[in-house]
Image (tube, rainbow, N blue to C red; front, side, top):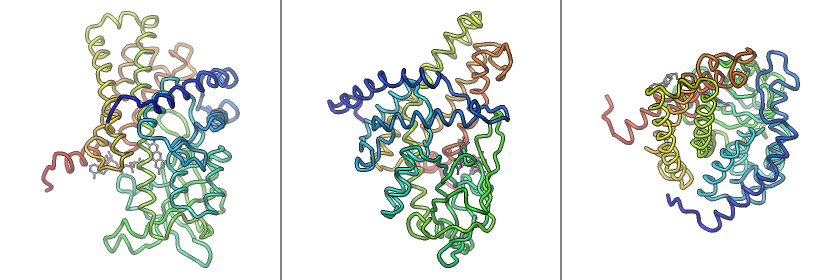
Length: 406
Ligand SMILES: Cc1cc2nc3c(=O)[nH]c(=O)nc-3n(C[C@H](O)[C@H](O)[C@H](O)COP(=O)(O)OP(=O)(O)OC[C@H]3O[C@@H](n4cnc5c(N)ncnc54)[C@H](O)[C@@H]3O)c2cc1C
C-alpha cells in the first residue's frame, strides 16, 4: 500500500476534518461527552436506550454531511470511498473520538449487502431506513452449535405457500432486543448437512423482529450490560419477500457481509494510542510511583511500539480486503495482533493506575467512573469476536506457514 496521500485523498481528509471541527463540538455540547450503556437494570434515558438515542442523533448528524455511509454508492447517499479514504476516515474518526453509531452493522455490513443482493423494492424499503437511523438493525448469524463453524447453522426456514416458517435459535446477537430489523441466516435445505454440503441450503433473510413467534432474550455479559441476545423462533411465519438473494445463496451473502466487518478496524491503532496516552497521563495524578517502576516503563514502551506495528499491519490487511485479494496472512495476523494488544493495554491500565482502576462503576473511589475496569473485562471479547484467536492461528498455520494437516 502506498501511504502517501493523493491530492483527492488530502481533500477528502481536509473536508472531513473541517466538518468534524465544526459539528462534533456542537454535538457533544448538546448530548454530553460520554455515553453510558449501563442501565443498572432500570432502562430509561440514562440506560441503553439513552445511549442509543445519542448514537441515533450522531448517525443522523453524520448523514446530514454525507459522512455516515462512505462506501455506499452515491445514489444511496454514499461517497464510493477508495481504500485510502477508508483508512483516512477510520483514523480521523478515531482521532476525534467520535461517538458510537446507531446502525454500525447496518451501515458497514447489511446495507451494502441489500444494495448488492436486494430487489428494487427491498432496497427502497430498507436502505433509507438504515441510513436515516429510523430503526435499529442487528445481524443474526451465530447459533449455539454454529459460531466459528458458522456453516453448521440449523435454524430452519421451511417454505409454506407465500411464507417461510422459522424454528430454531440464534445466540450472541448484539442489541437484538432494541432492533426492529435484522439480517439472519437460516437453513432452507435441511438435508444439506447430512449430505456433507453444509455451505449449501443456507438462505439470507431480512426479518422483522416484531413478528409473532420471534422472541429476543437479553444475556447479561461480563461487564454487567445486556448487549447480547438469544433469539428464539417458534413457528414464526415470515413472507417469502423477506429473502435476500436466491434461496440457498445465503453463504455468498454472509461472506460479503463479514468482509465489510473488517473495514472498520483501520482506526483501532489510533484509539489504542489515545488510550495509552490517557492512562499514562492519569497515572501521573492517580498513581505516580507506577511511572518510576522499570517493569511498567518497559511495558509502556513496548505498547507504544506494538501500536505502531498494529497500525501498519492493519493497513496491509485492509488494503487486501478492499482490493478483493486473498486476505491471508495479513488479515488473520492483524486480527491476532489487535486483539492481543487490546487486552495487553487494558491490563497495563490496571497496573498503572493502581487499585482504583479495578473498582467498578458506581464506587466512589473508582477511577474515571469505573471505565478502566469496564475496559479490562470488555476487552476479553477481542479474542472471540470477528474470528477467535484459535481459528486465526489455524488459518495462518494452514495458509501462510502451510503446516501439514494430520
Ligand atoms: C462482542 C461480540 C459481538 C458479537 N455479535 C454478534 C452478532 O451481532 N451477531 C452474530 O451472529 N454473532 C455475534 N457474535 C458471536 C461471534 O460471531 C461468535 O462468538 C464467534 O463466531 C465464535 O463462536 P462461538 O462463540 O460459538 O465459539 P466457538 O466457535 O464454539 O468456539 C469456542 C472455542 O473453541 C475454539 N475453536 C472453535 N473451532 C476451532 C477449531 N477448528 N480449531 C481450534 N479451536 C477452535 C474457539 O477458538 C474458542 O476458543 C458476537 C461475539 C462477540 C464476542
